[in-house]
Length: 357
Image (cartoon, rainbow, N blue to C red; front, side):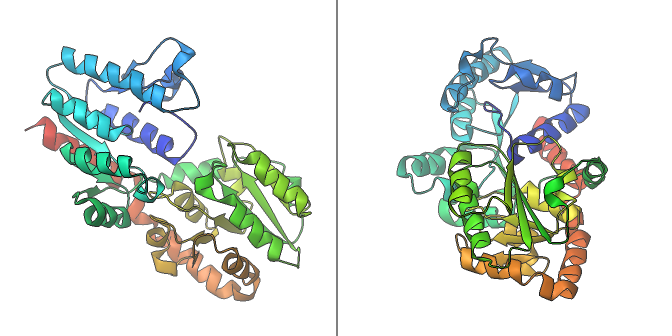
């Protein structure tokens, strides 16, 4: 895992690697971020550079140093199974040069990069070298099958409901959400992929300002979003808070969880919002939301970048309270397919298949 940022991929990485360290001996993590040591179980070996030189905004220098470490590791260790979370095509190529087995976990839809011919060609050619490709949704699996001819195996993101509910009970003071109005929240990095501008435009269309939107996240688009809020006189109804280690104590105070991404894999944050019994309005981005929301049976789905339809779904929330309650209850009931132990056991079985060849 060369590049550690703040997001769902990283959250799943720590859950999975710590779980696997309880099931298997000699688990080693290669990353550019030495600081993650405290998030790993003590029995996990960590290989990372001592220098902070490699910790840059770009992920490619991190890929470079970690692929060198991977090469050296494969030279020194005869019996190795590689599990790649990032730099999958490069890791696959290096691993196969040494005639080792590799499992790759592809984290998000190809919509984010498939228009780049070079990346698409590399992906199609080299990911097939993987002995097992794991994806986190059936939509994503179908995408890889049809676009790239890659047969993948689905393991949902593991959801620890008890942990989320426990953290949501931590008390906070949030004056912004005080009062009787529709409380809307979103949590995610402030980057183009998340398309927060669409939700701001949706809020701007609502003339009855008996609503408030809380955006939690950090990223390169923060200034652009703040400028839109200021230019459209939305400061009284929209607030941005920086990244929070525990977003659940904020989500639990809301009525609606709003999601506007243009591509994903399987967005953890929607599962977490369902776990806290929040009503979800999401874009129909590839991949994940439609699968989580059962094609709209347990939430509302709108076309990507369509702020008019998103705005209408927000305004209809109060008018459809009975339907909303039923959808929330059904969504919570259907979270069992994302059960932590069930999906972690799937990872364990895949790894055993290669270890005991």
